[in-house]
Length: 511
Ligand SMILES: [Zn+2]
Image 1: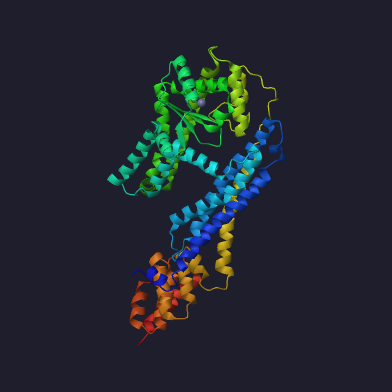
Image 2: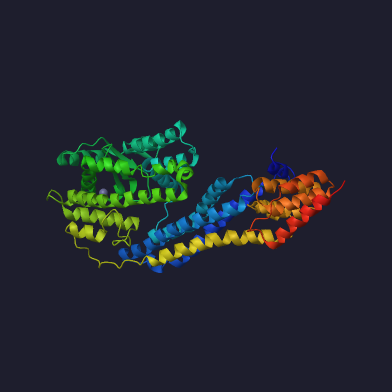
């Protein structure tokens, strides 16, 4: 039995659950209150007014800002909580505490996020529809991203066949999803189905006219109005709202846009598949960190980011190209495409001019003008990005501060003597507990455990010798004292003196 296990055995069975429970509560409370506070600040009453472009600009600022703050708060609170609350007596290690706190924080933030979304969009699709929509997105469309994150969490840190298998599994999932595996899985789960016959007929008619092959046409559960193309699988998917909202001419124009994606050059289609594997290096992250350290891993993240930035340029060109297919070549009525775009943006609460210049799609305002449509509303002002950014930074600080303050209050402010053992993440916490322990036999257990975690803690090593002397074990004390080094330079004067005194005492000890 290890020395740490011996200390664990001194406590009741519920003790290992205290730190995980506190961590989960910390994540939930921080997600709820910090994200709630940020949204209270970001939400402007104009997100409930008309005309819609102004409403969308303010609503989008609050919704996108809220998501961003959720990311910063959850990241900060989970890392700091895991560092402080995954102590030697916790039932969960650092990584597990981090995952638990992260999940709890996102759940805590979901309430405020949902409320601001209902205000901004003016509708509440209900819990069931929201879940189905999220499942459609994360399983049918982005299941390969989820799979790569799961694979990354369980991949081995050593090179070898198992690691290779994990990386291959990630790559295969991405290929499978590009070829429509997600749609099949979604169908199995009841999230997707074949599009209604009228839509099928419309798409086939339009595909024939454009000379594009289509192999599958889906309808999909979602709370947003959207259409997707799977260029490798040659399939299209329409969400339920877009089928409800658009008339035949508008849907024809949107179909022409999506067919434009199916007709992309092979290089772009394969490029899209390659970019869908961008997260693959994460699967090998633990091995990579073991090889080259965190800096090397940071370089990999930067490379991933660079690939995505380069890809976005091509994607934007492809959007403009597909838009041209929808309104160009005077086959189509540009007005119908313009109407469709406005209906979709309005329903989804997407601003006509986006604050992010790097978005994959051009702004609605520019897309309308390119279609030859002049909107009957003025170009809306773009909401500044600094508000969301500042909220994100404050969320990061809050998420670091709250767990830190609570931990210090528990460790230094409580009268319960075991508190620091429950929450401490460092070996010296065990040493402090040993020092407070009146029973020298038990104190010895704490010192052994502390030294097991940090063998170079010279103060603890000396305190252990002193405890052996208290127990009258002169031989053990003298032997252990031999191991005490001449105190290294970084040891403070008091500890240096303590080591010298204990050493002299051990030498003088006679049974
Ligand atoms: Zn498109």
